Length: 128
Image (cartoon, rainbow, N blue to C red; front, side, top):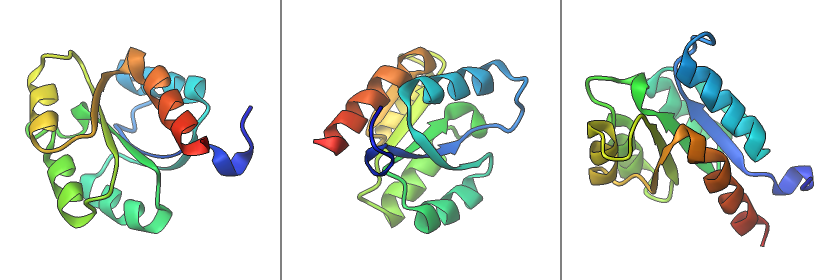
């Protein structure tokens, strides 16, 4: 296991409902990746505040947080914090949320099942 200071710091923006399939899958993916979750919110507006308070390495956004505008937070965060690294978890690689996230500047778009590998790669890059 990596030393505590070299672990990837993640801000999770996802629904609070622990019984939801995506919430459970996201939690398992983050645990498998061995990252430090430095904050969690289901609110886009709170996510902006947490980003500047906690200074995460990566923001993981579940596209179901704002079903009508799934990538709105990506656009907002990229405008106010252009150096932020945002990964959007989507239901399908070719879904509308995935296309919207890419269009607004997400650094990565991933299925939940692929998140552990993606985050592990980011953690390795940080440690190097």
